[in-house]
Length: 188
Image (cartoon, rainbow, N blue to C red; front, side, top):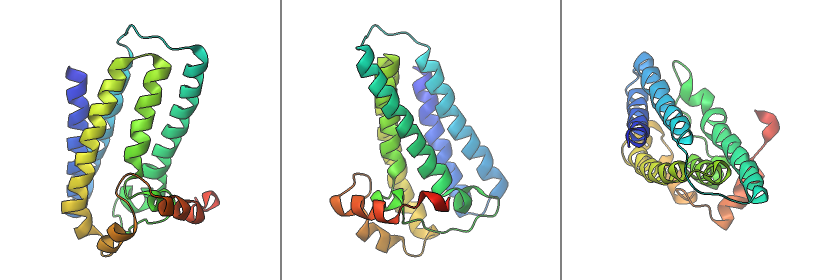
């Protein structure tokens, strides 16, 4: 399906965004970043418009909608607000964020992304978006693995220590506790 492929291409463009950030290619990185995010969003909306023959109880859908909205908020918060100033400004300073949701895991956006698609698929009663979300989550995991292996260890001086103290994707009891003790919503 073309929309699935466009979403995968979006992640590839996001990887180019990271490479351009590492190489101080300031203007080009925005092209890749905006294009990558746009392809994922456009593909998602297109997949939502494909009807599927699956139905869920209204109460289950309502709970799923609330969980999808919370997950979307957390995704935006983690990916754009917590690291925003350090990552997305023109001449960014490469500063490692290890507090808040980044104390929970090194890549909390992967979890929030999965939850947005999982709960969104239930609310919209659309198994196409569920399938795309699962495939894109696998691609997202490959993407963050490549970030860790080739980019973040070069961008951030203390990344090796961060790897030792914080789980990659799935939180631990200690990381959950650290997340809540370092999360300060009023600072943002």
